Length: 399
View 1 (cartoon, one colour):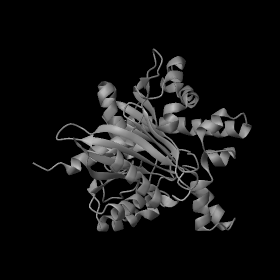
View 2 (view 1 turned 135 degrees about the vertical axis):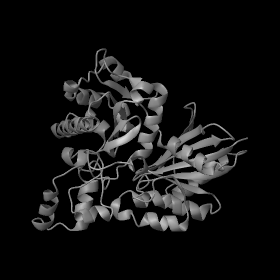
View 3 (view 1 turned 30 degrees about the vertical axis):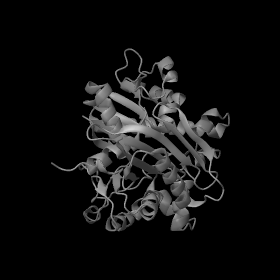
């Protein structure tokens, strides 16, 4: 029997996970994919095997409150499932690696302290990334843990793309554009090389659209530009985050409205975006199903902002050969994809309505119409697979 790796992807309302078999050679083989969703309310544990057969779908007991108890239940379930296999390591998605962490790293207490110091750069996400690391170190202290960084895919961004128009001393102190969603973009870049190598070598914009949203401009599978910057607040409109905003508004809210830093942070991270504009929900599915005018306005603003930023990414690349939609919204919201591509028709993007309506990303679906100058695809992302690949590499002895 082969050994196994656990990949953990902790977010604000869920822990996604994957279990992968690893042997002496070859890449990790998916065994299980699942999540525990609703960490602060009703907690539901779901899991399915590689064939899509359901293994679990149940509520956790009310007494299993808090992320520590939730992770404990998950580890117990994983070890029971793996009877006959050994769990040899756990990999974690760490949102911010700063300037120092540009490759996967074995996590130690010193590494945790260094990553914790980056929390001001990602106040919503970094504590959530590190919480499972700390908990697992208590529950299974001998289990190796590997940190994989969402910022690493973009670490080679060059000026002027990575620069802000601030005094140079601020850039020297680390204030630059870092970019995020790198584990997802790394997966898509590799998947594109498998299914469309000619396109992968060209100028491609990937739209990672979920509760957090960003774009990445790639050439030959490498990041050349991205919409998120110093923090994960920048760029596209998101579920509850505003994206790019006139900084003068922030000064106004503090100076004229008397908002504190904490109030402003809560507004920008939790009350804005789709939720703020619609007043209904931050969930794109809910808004697309709603007939409320404010819901329609939120969707329209989202499509407008997205198409505008795709055009900006195309400018960085000097043209556009392909556009890939991924993430929960990107993979499943066909109407949103159609709205965006209609706005990009001047770039030569033409969508096939029937193919678009049928696509869910599992087969790296082509949804562009015949004659479209931009190849349009829907590709399901898998950040947990990227994590597992990095963990396996970290565990492989250097020859």
